[in-house]
Length: 297
Image 1: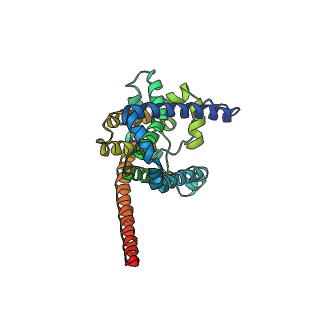
Image 2: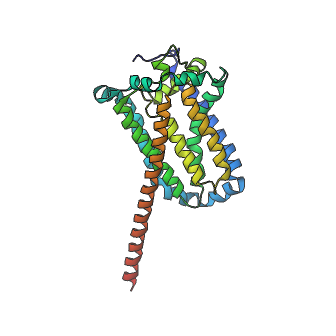
Image 3: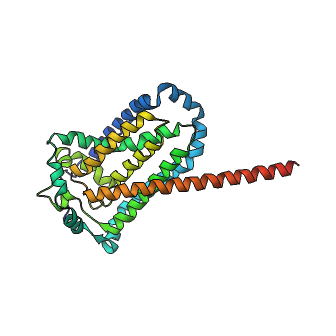
């Protein structure tokens, strides 16, 4: 399967990458700040600052763990293609045979101008949906939700690395170039510099965009009492991002379904792991307290 290229010149690619990154980071920071005021509240933000040091100490190992796994994931990105060429299974034709031209039909439901909204959701909305809940859950009195979310992210990224090495699959924009459009890359070719820096066109099964945002949505449901406004905001962006992965020609619907399954499994396993870790921590703390009491006696 030949990779479909976009009109991005190699000259100045580094400058383009930095420019796109600055725009995305700035946009996500602004979205996070506005949502923090609307969802968390100014008074709660001020009050949470007093306990921030404790909360960072409590969740610190999980944050570091996610950073390490994410770094390893990006490092594996450099070596996964040669490994996949040896052990990977090409499934593009299988996905095409099962799904056909579903994505092309989906694209036909929207006007050409929809690319502006879906490109925004795919790039800015996705990054925002990953960052905001980390900030929001960090400010809660209990760090249980943040720990579970971070572990779920770790499972998602780890599973993604394994699947992308085991299965070689190109998205519909590559498999059906004469039928499926690639509106985001044609309209905003600069974005190709960013996406190619963090991913390859053969990494489509499952859709990590889908698995990660569905993971966030599940936790938004679990924390609807703490942050009731967040659930509706999260649901809007999640639906938009999931549709965008197909409308933009990047993922098959099968990738999306697999992403949903991965998200559910990640949340289940993360909650089990954190419960086990907390119980073990509590048992260890009880033993330590008992030993100190015996020493004093």
